[in-house]
Image (cartoon, rainbow, N blue to C red; front, side, top):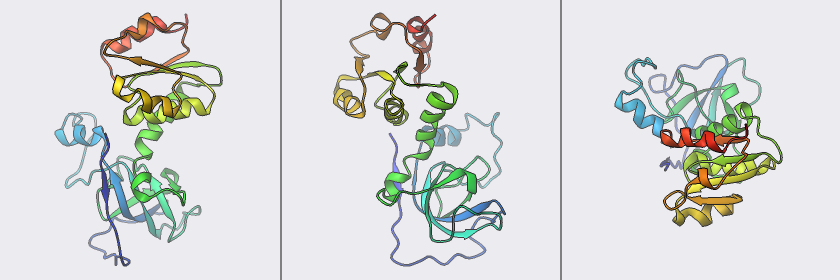
Length: 226
C-alpha cells in the first residue's frame, strides 16, 4: 500500500537559498506537490540497509515525486520552468518528502495533463520496478506466459498491465477478495494463494515475477519451461 502526501498551493512558493537543494547542471529543482511512500522508505529508516547504502545526515527521504519545475540546470534541455513532472530520484538526490527536490533530467518525465499530482506520485518507483523486471530484464514479449506473484500489490498492479500491454498471457496470485481487481487489470488466470497451490496448476511458463521471496521463489522454478 502506498500513501500519498498531498500539498496544495494557492500561490507560488518563493524559494530561498536556505531551503532549496543545490542545483546541478544536469538537474532541475521541482516544487513538490505530491510524494508517496514505499517499503524501501521504511526499510531505510529502520537502518536495515546501512551496510549497503551510506547516508549523510540529515537525510531527506522519498523516492517518488510529482511537482512543478521551478529552476533548471544549464545543461537541461527537455523540460523548462513551469512544466509538471513526475520522477524517481536517485539515491544521492532522493528527497521527495520535502517542499523542493532536485531531480536529474534523465530521471523525470512530463506528467500527463489528465493525471493528478497525487496519482502521478504513485507511479515512478513501483512502475519502474515492474517495467525493468518484465521488459528490461525479463524480455517479456507477445504470447509469453508470465506468473506475477502478489498481483494486487503496488508493483503487481503495474506488472499485470505492462504484461498485457505487450500481449503476454498473465497468471497472478492474490487473495479471493482481490480477484475482481486483478481481473480488471487484465489477468487471464487468477490463483487464490490461500486455497490453491500455483505450482500444481501452472506449467511451461516463460517468466515468473516474484515480490514475495521465501518458498515462492523455490516453488516458482517448478512451473518454468525447461
